[in-house]
Image (cartoon, rainbow, N blue to C red; front, side, top):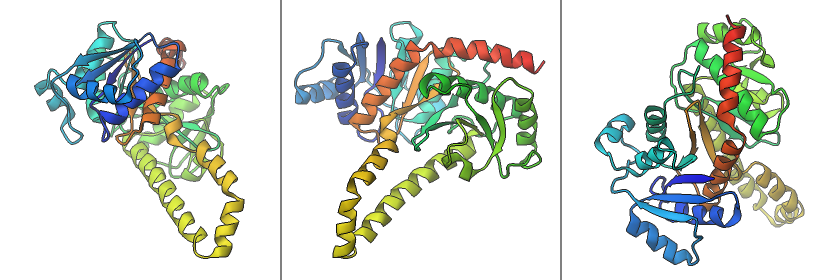
Length: 335
Protein backbone atom coordinates (compact mmCIF):
# COMPACT_ATOMS: atom_id res chain seq x y z
CA UNK A 1 0.00 0.00 0.00
CA UNK A 2 1.41 3.36 -1.06
CA UNK A 3 -0.26 6.53 0.24
CA UNK A 4 0.43 10.12 -0.84
CA UNK A 5 -0.27 12.68 1.90
CA UNK A 6 -0.74 16.41 1.40
CA UNK A 7 1.36 17.40 4.41
CA UNK A 8 0.51 21.10 4.09
CA UNK A 9 -3.28 20.78 3.97
CA UNK A 10 -5.43 21.72 6.97
CA UNK A 11 -5.52 24.15 9.84
CA UNK A 12 -2.94 22.22 11.86
CA UNK A 13 -0.55 21.36 9.04
CA UNK A 14 2.15 20.25 8.95
CA UNK A 15 2.35 19.35 12.66
CA UNK A 16 -0.73 17.13 13.03
CA UNK A 17 -0.55 15.80 9.48
CA UNK A 18 3.04 14.59 9.86
CA UNK A 19 2.39 13.21 13.33
CA UNK A 20 -0.68 11.28 12.14
CA UNK A 21 1.14 9.96 9.08
CA UNK A 22 3.99 8.63 11.20
CA UNK A 23 1.51 6.97 13.57
CA UNK A 24 -0.14 5.26 10.58
CA UNK A 25 3.21 4.10 9.20
CA UNK A 26 4.08 2.65 12.60
CA UNK A 27 0.76 0.88 13.19
CA UNK A 28 -0.32 -0.47 9.81
CA UNK A 29 1.86 -3.18 8.33
CA UNK A 30 0.16 -2.88 4.95
CA UNK A 31 1.73 0.53 4.27
CA UNK A 32 4.80 -0.02 2.09
CA UNK A 33 5.41 3.63 1.24
CA UNK A 34 4.00 6.82 2.72
CA UNK A 35 4.82 10.00 0.81
CA UNK A 36 4.68 13.35 2.60
CA UNK A 37 4.37 16.20 0.10
CA UNK A 38 5.02 19.82 0.93
CA UNK A 39 7.68 22.15 2.33
CA UNK A 40 10.54 19.69 2.91
CA UNK A 41 12.22 21.79 5.57
CA UNK A 42 9.00 22.16 7.58
CA UNK A 43 8.15 18.47 7.24
CA UNK A 44 11.60 17.29 8.31
CA UNK A 45 11.49 19.64 11.27
CA UNK A 46 8.35 17.86 12.48
CA UNK A 47 9.87 14.46 11.79
CA UNK A 48 12.89 15.43 13.89
CA UNK A 49 10.57 16.47 16.71
CA UNK A 50 8.83 13.09 16.60
CA UNK A 51 12.15 11.27 16.65
CA UNK A 52 12.00 7.77 15.19
CA UNK A 53 10.72 7.85 11.59
CA UNK A 54 9.67 4.59 9.88
CA UNK A 55 11.68 3.73 6.76
CA UNK A 56 8.45 3.69 4.74
CA UNK A 57 8.08 7.49 5.11
CA UNK A 58 9.44 9.54 2.21
CA UNK A 59 9.42 13.34 1.91
CA UNK A 60 8.80 14.95 -1.48
CA UNK A 61 9.32 18.69 -1.73
CA UNK A 62 6.50 20.85 -3.14
CA UNK A 63 7.01 24.60 -3.24
CA UNK A 64 3.39 25.76 -3.15
CA UNK A 65 0.30 25.39 -0.96
CA UNK A 66 -3.32 26.02 -1.94
CA UNK A 67 -4.96 27.99 0.86
CA UNK A 68 -8.34 27.12 2.33
CA UNK A 69 -9.99 30.22 0.85
CA UNK A 70 -8.52 30.07 -2.66
CA UNK A 71 -10.64 29.30 -5.71
CA UNK A 72 -9.76 25.64 -6.39
CA UNK A 73 -9.60 25.48 -10.20
CA UNK A 74 -7.79 28.80 -10.54
CA UNK A 75 -5.31 27.92 -7.78
CA UNK A 76 -4.52 24.56 -9.39
CA UNK A 77 -3.78 26.25 -12.72
CA UNK A 78 -1.57 28.88 -11.12
CA UNK A 79 0.18 26.67 -8.58
CA UNK A 80 1.61 23.82 -10.63
CA UNK A 81 3.80 22.68 -7.74
CA UNK A 82 1.15 22.60 -5.00
CA UNK A 83 1.31 19.86 -2.38
CA UNK A 84 -2.19 18.56 -3.23
CA UNK A 85 -1.55 18.66 -6.98
CA UNK A 86 1.73 16.78 -6.64
CA UNK A 87 0.12 14.21 -4.34
CA UNK A 88 -2.60 13.45 -6.89
CA UNK A 89 0.07 13.26 -9.61
CA UNK A 90 1.64 10.32 -7.76
CA UNK A 91 -1.65 8.43 -7.95
CA UNK A 92 -2.04 9.30 -11.63
CA UNK A 93 1.48 8.04 -12.34
CA UNK A 94 0.82 4.78 -10.51
CA UNK A 95 3.42 5.56 -7.85
CA UNK A 96 0.77 5.81 -5.09
CA UNK A 97 -2.46 3.91 -4.54
CA UNK A 98 -4.33 6.67 -2.71
CA UNK A 99 -4.11 10.32 -1.72
CA UNK A 100 -5.16 12.06 1.50
CA UNK A 101 -5.63 15.79 2.09
CA UNK A 102 -7.15 17.81 4.92
CA UNK A 103 -6.67 21.04 2.98
CA UNK A 104 -8.88 22.93 0.55
CA UNK A 105 -11.70 20.47 -0.23
CA UNK A 106 -12.49 22.06 -3.57
CA UNK A 107 -8.85 21.76 -4.61
CA UNK A 108 -8.74 18.08 -3.65
CA UNK A 109 -11.94 17.42 -5.61
CA UNK A 110 -10.79 19.43 -8.63
CA UNK A 111 -7.29 17.91 -8.70
CA UNK A 112 -8.63 14.36 -8.40
CA UNK A 113 -11.35 14.89 -10.99
CA UNK A 114 -9.15 16.67 -13.54
CA UNK A 115 -6.07 14.51 -13.17
CA UNK A 116 -7.57 11.07 -12.45
CA UNK A 117 -10.87 11.46 -14.34
CA UNK A 118 -14.06 9.68 -13.32
CA UNK A 119 -14.86 5.99 -13.43
CA UNK A 120 -16.71 4.54 -16.39
CA UNK A 121 -20.40 5.33 -16.04
CA UNK A 122 -19.87 8.08 -13.43
CA UNK A 123 -20.46 11.68 -14.51
CA UNK A 124 -19.36 13.45 -11.33
CA UNK A 125 -17.70 12.25 -8.12
CA UNK A 126 -19.32 12.72 -4.71
CA UNK A 127 -17.98 13.15 -1.19
CA UNK A 128 -19.25 10.35 1.03
CA UNK A 129 -19.29 11.09 4.75
CA UNK A 130 -19.84 8.44 7.40
CA UNK A 131 -21.97 9.85 10.21
CA UNK A 132 -20.65 8.45 13.53
CA UNK A 133 -24.06 7.69 15.03
CA UNK A 134 -24.61 4.54 17.17
CA UNK A 135 -25.48 2.87 13.82
CA UNK A 136 -23.27 4.74 11.33
CA UNK A 137 -24.58 5.60 7.87
CA UNK A 138 -23.11 7.07 4.68
CA UNK A 139 -24.33 10.44 3.39
CA UNK A 140 -23.49 11.67 -0.11
CA UNK A 141 -22.96 14.11 -1.61
CA UNK A 142 -21.47 16.11 1.27
CA UNK A 143 -20.28 19.06 -0.77
CA UNK A 144 -18.71 18.27 -4.14
CA UNK A 145 -21.77 19.06 -6.28
CA UNK A 146 -24.07 21.92 -5.35
CA UNK A 147 -26.68 21.28 -8.06
CA UNK A 148 -27.50 17.72 -9.08
CA UNK A 149 -29.94 16.37 -11.68
CA UNK A 150 -31.83 13.21 -10.77
CA UNK A 151 -29.55 10.83 -12.67
CA UNK A 152 -26.57 12.03 -10.57
CA UNK A 153 -28.45 11.25 -7.37
CA UNK A 154 -28.97 7.78 -8.79
CA UNK A 155 -25.23 7.39 -9.37
CA UNK A 156 -24.55 8.61 -5.83
CA UNK A 157 -26.92 5.95 -4.49
CA UNK A 158 -25.02 3.20 -6.30
CA UNK A 159 -21.62 4.42 -5.08
CA UNK A 160 -22.86 4.89 -1.52
CA UNK A 161 -24.33 1.39 -1.47
CA UNK A 162 -21.03 -0.15 -2.59
CA UNK A 163 -19.13 1.84 0.04
CA UNK A 164 -21.55 0.89 2.83
CA UNK A 165 -21.16 -2.79 1.95
CA UNK A 166 -17.36 -2.65 1.96
CA UNK A 167 -16.62 -0.32 4.87
CA UNK A 168 -19.70 -0.61 7.12
CA UNK A 169 -20.21 -4.30 6.27
CA UNK A 170 -23.91 -3.86 5.50
CA UNK A 171 -25.66 -6.56 3.53
CA UNK A 172 -28.00 -4.96 0.97
CA UNK A 173 -27.67 -1.45 2.42
CA UNK A 174 -30.93 0.43 2.89
CA UNK A 175 -30.82 3.49 0.61
CA UNK A 176 -32.91 6.57 1.38
CA UNK A 177 -33.46 9.78 -0.57
CA UNK A 178 -33.33 12.83 1.69
CA UNK A 179 -36.48 14.90 1.25
CA UNK A 180 -39.00 17.03 3.14
CA UNK A 181 -41.40 14.17 3.74
CA UNK A 182 -41.62 10.40 3.66
CA UNK A 183 -44.43 10.28 1.10
CA UNK A 184 -43.63 9.58 -2.56
CA UNK A 185 -45.15 12.90 -3.60
CA UNK A 186 -42.95 15.06 -1.31
CA UNK A 187 -39.95 17.00 -2.56
CA UNK A 188 -38.99 19.13 -5.53
CA UNK A 189 -39.10 17.94 -9.14
CA UNK A 190 -35.54 16.63 -9.00
CA UNK A 191 -36.08 14.49 -5.91
CA UNK A 192 -39.38 13.20 -7.32
CA UNK A 193 -37.62 12.14 -10.52
CA UNK A 194 -34.78 10.60 -8.51
CA UNK A 195 -37.35 8.70 -6.44
CA UNK A 196 -38.78 7.09 -9.58
CA UNK A 197 -35.29 6.26 -10.82
CA UNK A 198 -34.25 4.60 -7.57
CA UNK A 199 -37.55 2.80 -7.16
CA UNK A 200 -37.01 1.13 -10.55
CA UNK A 201 -33.45 0.07 -9.69
CA UNK A 202 -32.15 -3.09 -8.03
CA UNK A 203 -30.92 -1.13 -5.01
CA UNK A 204 -32.51 -1.70 -1.62
CA UNK A 205 -34.34 1.62 -1.89
CA UNK A 206 -36.58 2.35 1.10
CA UNK A 207 -37.98 5.64 -0.22
CA UNK A 208 -37.78 9.18 1.07
CA UNK A 209 -36.21 9.82 4.45
CA UNK A 210 -36.43 12.93 6.62
CA UNK A 211 -33.89 14.38 9.03
CA UNK A 212 -35.15 12.44 12.10
CA UNK A 213 -34.74 9.15 10.21
CA UNK A 214 -31.00 9.71 9.90
CA UNK A 215 -30.36 9.14 13.59
CA UNK A 216 -32.77 6.27 14.23
CA UNK A 217 -30.87 3.50 12.46
CA UNK A 218 -33.37 3.17 9.62
CA UNK A 219 -31.03 3.83 6.72
CA UNK A 220 -27.49 2.90 5.64
CA UNK A 221 -27.06 5.28 2.70
CA UNK A 222 -28.57 8.78 2.48
CA UNK A 223 -28.59 10.48 -0.92
CA UNK A 224 -28.86 14.23 -1.55
CA UNK A 225 -27.14 17.02 -3.48
CA UNK A 226 -23.95 18.59 -2.16
CA UNK A 227 -25.64 21.77 -0.97
CA UNK A 228 -28.11 19.95 1.28
CA UNK A 229 -25.54 17.37 2.34
CA UNK A 230 -23.00 19.95 3.43
CA UNK A 231 -25.62 21.83 5.44
CA UNK A 232 -26.72 18.60 7.15
CA UNK A 233 -23.10 17.68 7.93
CA UNK A 234 -22.09 21.04 9.38
CA UNK A 235 -25.36 21.45 11.30
CA UNK A 236 -24.96 18.01 12.86
CA UNK A 237 -21.36 18.76 13.87
CA UNK A 238 -22.41 22.08 15.41
CA UNK A 239 -25.32 20.57 17.33
CA UNK A 240 -23.10 17.78 18.70
CA UNK A 241 -20.55 20.31 19.97
CA UNK A 242 -23.27 22.52 21.43
CA UNK A 243 -24.91 19.63 23.28
CA UNK A 244 -21.52 18.71 24.75
CA UNK A 245 -21.07 22.25 26.08
CA UNK A 246 -24.62 22.48 27.40
CA UNK A 247 -24.34 19.13 29.15
CA UNK A 248 -21.06 20.11 30.78
CA UNK A 249 -22.54 23.39 31.98
CA UNK A 250 -25.61 21.70 33.46
CA UNK A 251 -23.64 18.91 35.16
CA UNK A 252 -21.35 21.36 36.93
CA UNK A 253 -24.10 23.63 38.31
CA UNK A 254 -23.85 22.19 41.83
CA UNK A 255 -22.30 19.40 43.90
CA UNK A 256 -25.20 16.98 43.47
CA UNK A 257 -25.13 17.22 39.68
CA UNK A 258 -21.36 16.84 39.67
CA UNK A 259 -21.66 13.66 41.74
CA UNK A 260 -24.28 12.37 39.33
CA UNK A 261 -21.99 13.17 36.43
CA UNK A 262 -19.26 11.05 37.96
CA UNK A 263 -21.66 8.12 38.17
CA UNK A 264 -22.41 8.21 34.44
CA UNK A 265 -18.90 9.18 33.33
CA UNK A 266 -18.13 5.78 31.81
CA UNK A 267 -21.38 5.73 29.84
CA UNK A 268 -20.78 9.25 28.55
CA UNK A 269 -17.21 8.40 27.52
CA UNK A 270 -18.41 5.25 25.76
CA UNK A 271 -21.03 7.20 23.80
CA UNK A 272 -18.48 9.89 22.95
CA UNK A 273 -16.10 7.27 21.59
CA UNK A 274 -18.82 5.67 19.44
CA UNK A 275 -19.82 9.01 17.93
CA UNK A 276 -16.32 10.47 17.48
CA UNK A 277 -15.89 11.51 13.80
CA UNK A 278 -12.11 11.24 14.15
CA UNK A 279 -12.46 7.45 14.28
CA UNK A 280 -13.31 7.59 10.55
CA UNK A 281 -10.68 10.20 9.74
CA UNK A 282 -11.88 11.37 6.36
CA UNK A 283 -14.47 11.24 3.62
CA UNK A 284 -13.80 9.39 0.35
CA UNK A 285 -14.33 11.09 -2.97
CA UNK A 286 -16.31 8.35 -4.68
CA UNK A 287 -16.33 8.13 -8.46
CA UNK A 288 -12.79 9.15 -9.44
CA UNK A 289 -10.40 6.72 -11.09
CA UNK A 290 -8.25 6.41 -8.00
CA UNK A 291 -8.58 6.68 -4.24
CA UNK A 292 -8.93 10.14 -2.67
CA UNK A 293 -9.72 10.68 1.01
CA UNK A 294 -10.62 14.19 2.18
CA UNK A 295 -10.06 15.12 5.80
CA UNK A 296 -11.64 17.81 7.96
CA UNK A 297 -9.73 21.09 7.98
CA UNK A 298 -9.19 20.71 11.72
CA UNK A 299 -7.96 17.11 11.50
CA UNK A 300 -5.85 15.97 14.45
CA UNK A 301 -3.09 13.38 14.29
CA UNK A 302 -5.60 10.69 15.26
CA UNK A 303 -7.95 11.70 12.46
CA UNK A 304 -5.08 11.69 9.95
CA UNK A 305 -3.97 8.25 11.10
CA UNK A 306 -7.51 6.89 10.66
CA UNK A 307 -7.91 8.57 7.28
CA UNK A 308 -4.78 6.79 6.06
CA UNK A 309 -6.21 3.53 7.41
CA UNK A 310 -9.43 4.17 5.46
CA UNK A 311 -7.34 4.84 2.33
CA UNK A 312 -5.83 1.40 2.71
CA UNK A 313 -9.24 -0.21 3.22
CA UNK A 314 -10.51 1.43 0.02
CA UNK A 315 -7.69 -0.05 -2.03
CA UNK A 316 -7.88 -3.45 -0.35
CA UNK A 317 -11.61 -3.78 -1.05
CA UNK A 318 -11.24 -2.79 -4.74
CA UNK A 319 -14.11 -0.36 -4.29
CA UNK A 320 -13.71 1.29 -7.69
CA UNK A 321 -14.04 -2.06 -9.49
CA UNK A 322 -17.26 -2.77 -7.62
CA UNK A 323 -18.62 0.71 -8.38
CA UNK A 324 -18.09 0.21 -12.11
CA UNK A 325 -19.82 -3.18 -11.97
CA UNK A 326 -22.82 -1.82 -10.05
CA UNK A 327 -23.18 1.33 -12.13
CA UNK A 328 -23.36 -0.83 -15.26
CA UNK A 329 -26.15 -2.87 -13.63
CA UNK A 330 -27.90 0.33 -12.55
CA UNK A 331 -27.79 1.80 -16.03
CA UNK A 332 -29.15 -1.45 -17.41
CA UNK A 333 -32.00 -1.48 -14.88
CA UNK A 334 -32.96 2.01 -16.02
CA UNK A 335 -32.83 1.21 -19.72
